[in-house]
Length: 178
Image (cartoon, rainbow, N blue to C red; front, side, top):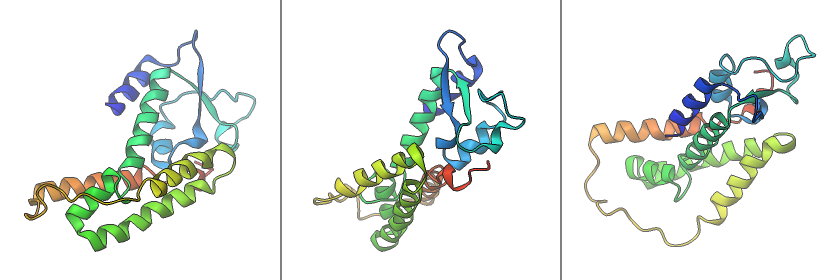
């Protein structure tokens, strides 16, 4: 749904009456790479190349574009293989408790890297990292059918979803030149 909202926002283009700036540097690295050619002219027009200044690159965007990006970012963070998040449950059911739990450290590492970003770019990783750690306490309910293994198609889809969550959560602040 978020991807469709993003596509609608990109198709509509920036609304001149309701101009909203999209801070390009807050985006995850994959979204930066995908959206860079689609966003058009930066609102920083006094530079020859607006992508050389990693601090103030902003683009005029439609509110639908912003909403779609927020939905994609929240979904990708929820797909990180951490504890009782959706990605954690998927990883533990497909890979087993031990390997799924070890993969959770990769997700926490991504959140830690994201929280080290300068200014407000680090707030997403820091806030979600605190959320993931604080709300992971308590008893964990096992899946309803934890006896039979999922078939290969479901395992493949689960691995793809967790990988997508990890790839879409790599902080863009690690690569300020993009």
